[in-house]
Amino acid sequence: MIGLIYTLASWQAGKLAARFGYFNALKFGFGLMAVGLASGLLLHTVGAKIVTACITNIGMCFIWPTIEALVSEGDTPEHVPHAVGIYNITWAATNAAAFFIGGTLYDHISHKIIFYLPLAMVIGQFGLVFWLKILHANLPPAPAESKMPPPDPNRPSPARAKTFLRMAWLANPFAYVAINTVIPLIPDLARKLELSPTLAGFFCSIWFFARLGTFVILWLWAGWHYRFGFLLAAYLLLIASFAVLLLVAQFWVILVAQIIFGLAIGLIYYSSLFYSMDVGETKGEHGGVHEAAIGAGIFLGPAVGATALRYFPQHSSSSIWAVSGLLLVGLAGLVWLRYRKN
Image (cartoon, rainbow, N blue to C red; front, side):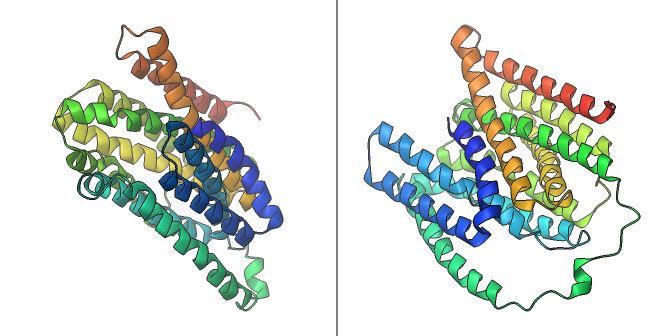
């Protein structure tokens, strides 16, 4: 349900941010997230928690597309990869850190920390938006020559660039299908390996750090841009590592599989965002589509897995095989987009 809401809200939020202003979108997004998190602290029924999660999720939909547009809006094509790289490294580092320490905070402080800490951060970010808007208003106008850079002879044709954008938009939701099938099953994985919440947070965050390392490499090295072999290899590794993660309950095998999983996820996500910001001028709308594709993956992974378990409860691994089959459908679509005749 969260994934479905995120898909629809992100798609529209990207358009609204482009229409009504990025800073206004950030204010609304952080404000709504604060309302949702505060409600989660005060309301204690299961239904209320679900509603507050949805409210927080809708607020978040106004954050990601807007920031993605802000980091690249008005930049020259030469600077976009640098800006996108810094953005990716920043969010991936904090995401990995949150997952790494989450179990420890839960064990040693309180389960309410999942509301207190994000709420404090969101309120701080809400205030930062006002400060950044003042700084932005006082910036000198960009030199005229920076707005019209000379054409880059190494850039692909517009048709080829759009093909890579479509392929990345297709691959990224399937990557999130895998992610959001793995994450709900981490408690089961922790039980199999007899890990406490603290140790589960440490061990099961390895792929987050592998993704972060991949982002750093892709930021520093541009040789993967518009090369299908890298995207295809990442997708194949995604399928293989996903199946190993959930079918093999051996410590060292899972450790290696997590590293490969993080590498594959990293390149697929980076491709989607980079091509979204590099192709065309509608950064906010492209950011919204990029995030909507993520929401589709968040929705499809758990939905397909749960459906498989519903109809084949006697087979405990039916959800894994069902999602693996879905990933193969994505692979077929990826190859079709690459070699179809325009």
